[in-house]
Image 1: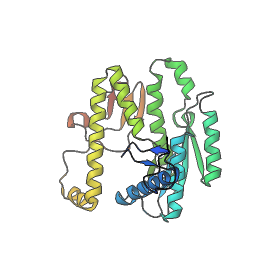
Image 2: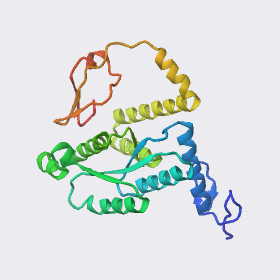
Image 3: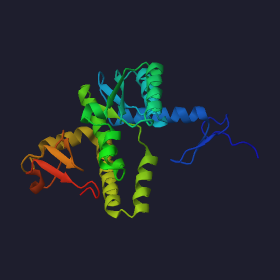
Image 4: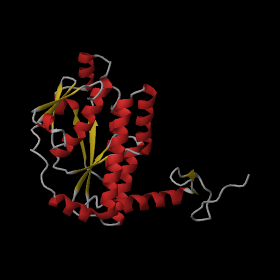
Amino acid sequence: MAPIICARCNTDRAVVKRPKNHQKICKACFISVFEDEVHHTILSSKLFSRGDRVAIGASGGKDSTVLASVLKTLNERHDYGLDLILLSIDEGIKGYRDDSLETVKRNAIQYDMPLTVVGYDELYGWTMDQVVGTVGKKGNCTYCGVFRRQALDRGSKMLGIRHLVTGHNADDIAETILMNLLRGDLPRLSRTKQKAEEEWRTMHVIQISREGAEKAKKGKKAAGPASQIECIEFGGWEIDTWYAAPYPEEYSRNRILYICEFCLN
C-alpha cells in the first residue's frame, strides 16, 4: 500500500490524523498548524497583555511539557513580551512525584524558565501521605484533586501572578464524562455538561466582542447584596475563597459554605 501524502504540504508522508477535521498531515505540518491555532486563540481571546507574568502549571507530564514548549516558542516568535514561570506542586506522596519533579527541573533548564515548587506541607501543613494516614484510602483522590487545584491558585498568588495556564485538553474532559457515566453519577455528569456549555458560551461571547461584553457588564445594575462567603468547608477542610460566586442569596448570607465531599452538593 502506497504511503498517504500530507494533505497540507503534499510532499511528506502523513503520520497524524487530526481528530478535529480528520485531516492527515505530516509531523512538520502538524506542529505548524498546532502552533498557529494556539497563537490565534491567544490573540482572538486577548488572553495576555505585554508584560504579564504567566505561571505554567508543570507536572512533568507530556501535556504540561508541550504547553511550556509552545508558549516559549510563540512568546519569542511573536514577541508577546510575557514573563513565563514554571509552577509545580509537590503533593508529598512518597515515590509518586519525585521522578516527575526531576523532569520539571530539566524542563526549567531546557526552556530557561524560573521554577517554583510549592508543597502541600507548606500550604496546608499536611503532606498527602499524612492525609491518607489520617482519613484512610477511601476518597483520598477527592482530597488530593481539590488540594492540587487550590495549590496552583495559592502558588500563583504567592508569586503575585494573575495568569495560570494548565495543559488540560479535550481528552481530559472526555475522560471525566466517561468516568461519570460508568459510575452512574448523573448529578455530577449534569454539572459537567452545564459547566462545559457555560464555558463555551463565555468564550463565544469573548471571541465575538469582548469590548461589547465589558460595556454591557458595566451598564448592569448590581444583582442583590454582595456575597458574605469567606470560606468553603469540604471534607473537614476549610478553603479560603478568592472570588465572589453567584450563589443564591440564602447561601451568600453565610460566612461558610458547606459542600459534601461525596456528592459535591
